[in-house]
Image (cartoon, rainbow, N blue to C red; front, side, top):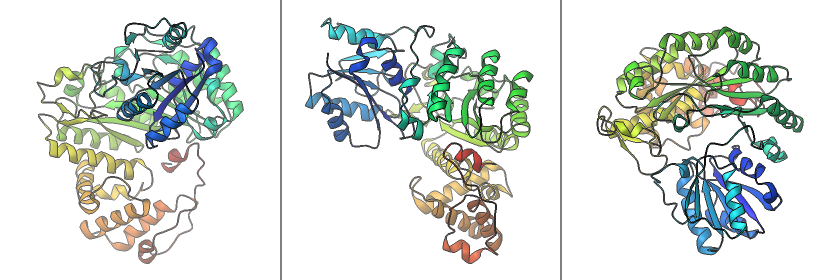
Length: 503
């Protein structure tokens, strides 16, 4: 064997594929002939094919995810048409669970499960001409105590421009039916001392943005505290991101979180629903009192930036129920509330509700919900636009004061839904809406539709926009504002830009 290429199509350039680096770290004697090529889903597939085949690989390993499955299917077709003798091996979540809902049939082999070590075994058989008869190869969960860690394969370009994905554990003990992590219920932890050695090397190279992909980071409080201590000993600015279960914040952990400076720590907190009946439907453990207590603590006593998740379209949940969830959360936290749309992932148990709750999903990735017995297709489309516009205005941090005027005279959900439907009628789009254009739409809606005083709205939008250094005011604001104030602007770095907007 002369050459192996490991590749995938990331959703955005700033993302990095930790899975490819795990494969490379564990390829033993094949490391020297292996290279990683990362692309973005917006790039030309023909040009990607050309770049991959330029090095004449014998084997191409491709990571398949929900966001790139359609493009990977086309890429396999192109690669096989131009170079049919090249062996293509697929892995990743979208290739690990059947039924496959995109055409992966042109691949030579598919590794189902954690392929860190299995990919090496397969390459060794190929090099020895001992080709397996089975196309789909089932990989057992990796032994994290013996795995070679991948972090030395983040290069200088990655460190300068991309998020460093890291992990302290694999698996999840919970049984949420919409989530692939619920399939692997055994939690396996990496040796933290080995992790710290690797993190030290990354830090020395300039890495300052660490995103932990552990599904339940605050499960083992002893390990969690060690990792928090590691970063507390570092000099800001830096940003560390963890996924946390909202019910489990013991006092020892709370005291540690309080010590982090502003914009240095970020938690993704999976709420999904506050409706107890819906939570029971999807086997989501829900302790409402603990959730409210812990969110209140994080909001009022720490500098943590929060991403609190809600899902649209869960079985048994109506628009009214979802509205109550959102209204409640906005009283608890002013941080980001990420509104996701339910997706039907192969391998999960969410499909057992299809008949009872009239669940219909798209067959096109990302396989999102189209309608339920309680939410029609037309209403679901409105909810998806609601989520998109919410992200542009509320979550972005660009209109912190202005957006809250949308529901000054009503509840949050109703106020924003009215704006969302009006905005779509004006734009007929949910994408390619610039900051200035969005500001103008907000100004028009708040003054002409809701009847607010022109100067007051202009002044509010000006205050939001000028918080960020280097921004220029559009003409309509200069003409309507009472004055252009001197505001202490934030010069945002690339490490914690979004988090600082919410301060």
